Length: 378
Image 1 (cartoon, rainbow, N blue to C red):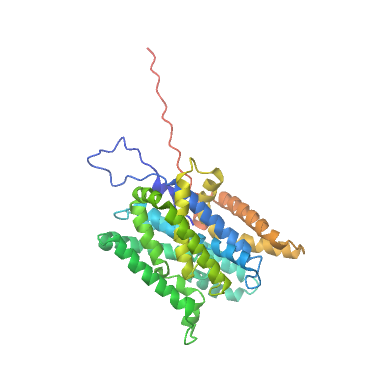
Image 2: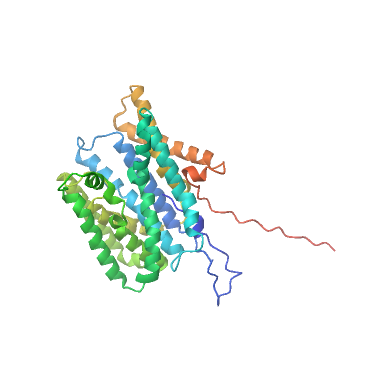
């Protein structure tokens, strides 16, 4: 999912007075977030490659647990979006903020919603209008964009009203609300079967920001004070590793007892995802440079998120049409081929002026122009 890394580009400080910092000054690129965004993107593609291959109900605990671990990808995307927002704009959103993101995030979401509706309904064209509406209201895998835009509004409210409140209070309340909200849909069946309740329990419940409130609150405080936050993590390395193992154990226990299906909206995924993010932030501190592959995946991550489902579908159908029985090998075949296909497609479309509005922008950092020195001869 990706966000514009240029929002985090480091602006030269030589032309800015220390006494009067420019309000337009941008902050440096966070290599840790580049890595984690790439890993989240890869985990989502791998999860869906697995989903396209196996039936979790028929699989053993190992495959189910591996898939559940990969579910940390989507909430991590959501968390990163909030963190970058708070890190880049800790006090207020700049002028033109919404229009820029409408063009580069919402337009691709809308285009791909229509694309998937046409693709899914090509055999029965009269269903396409209803499929388009379903996708635009969060019925396809690009739904997280709707959550991100709600985060923008929440960020404005936080910076205006809630920033003075103690972080411990905000985080505690948001966690309670988040867990209680998800518990309703994780443990309670609807008492009536109306179109509205059917929509909510079939997936509509995770579109409102309440389903992701704790991720937003945590990302706000982490992003706003990122350097201090990262430094403080080093003091709690042992605890983070311990609770990561504990949260993983809870996932396994719940899978063994079949309390939840595989998915990112489970209550136990909240704790596991937070511990995984903290663990990855710690690991990233020891890396001298960002691996090139992860940089590329991060740059293409939003487009990959939007397009990978299409390629997984057509590649799986092609394998089936050829009668190939690949077994578990189909998972890496789908994963690699879909990833490469997405990157090629995004690259080609971004060569056209309209391409970034269809499938998302490639978030490359701008190369600073090299100043030519004038040689004076006497």
